[in-house]
Image 1 (cartoon, rainbow, N blue to C red):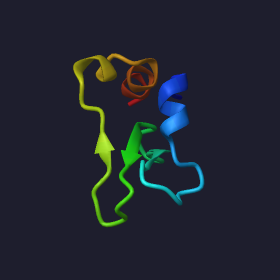
Image 2 (image 1 turned 180 degrees about the vertical axis):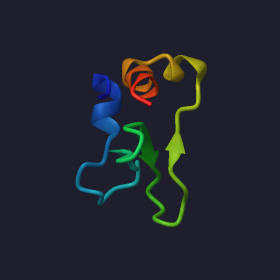
Image 3 (image 1 turned 90 degrees about the vertical axis):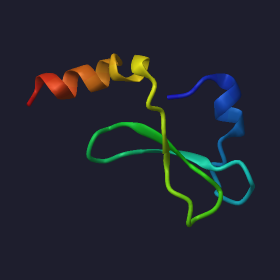
Image 4 (image 1 turned 120 degrees about the vertical axis):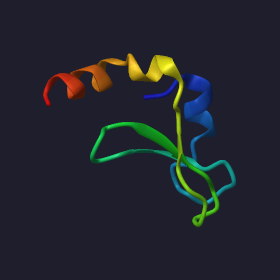
Length: 62
């Protein structure tokens, strides 16, 4: 799901200050949840993300 650098920064225990990565149950997209629980999730909206295999597969199944 992430590279070595971003996996190290991911707060698996939700106790620190970096935030953590989650997967959207509906779309399967990965997003970053900032450490502030009231902050909205941060999705990667880059064009290359739209070309990813999971996004392509879900668009083909509709």
